[in-house]
Image 1 (cartoon, rainbow, N blue to C red):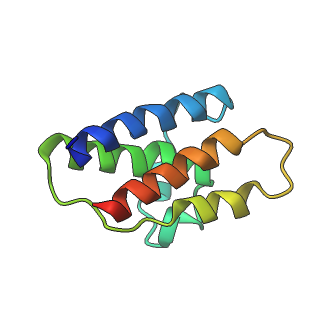
Image 2 (image 1 turned 180 degrees about the vertical axis):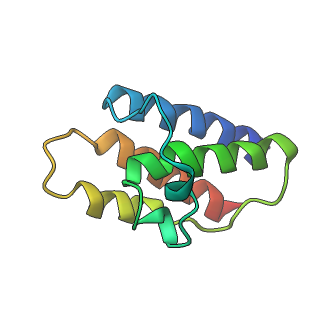
Length: 108
C-alpha cells in the first residue's frame, strides 16, 4: 500500500501546478502580519489562493517531510468552490485537486 505521505506529497505538487496554471501563484509572500492571522484560512488577510500557497502548502509539505500525523479532514474544496463562485477562471482542475486532497486525508 502506498504511503499517505507519498500520496500527499504528489498531491501538493499537483496543487502547486494548478495554482501556477491558473496564474494564481504569487512571486512575493504577503506581509508577516497577514500570515499571522488567527482566522480560519486567514480569511481576513489573504485570498484563498494566497492561503494555499503561503500557509497550506508549506505546512503540509513540512508535515509530509517529517512524517508527523496529518489532519484527518481539511474541507478545503468547498471553500474553493465558494471563493471562485462567479469567477471566469477555469478552476475545475483546482477544485478537483482539493477534493482529492480532502479525500486522501479522510481515508488516512
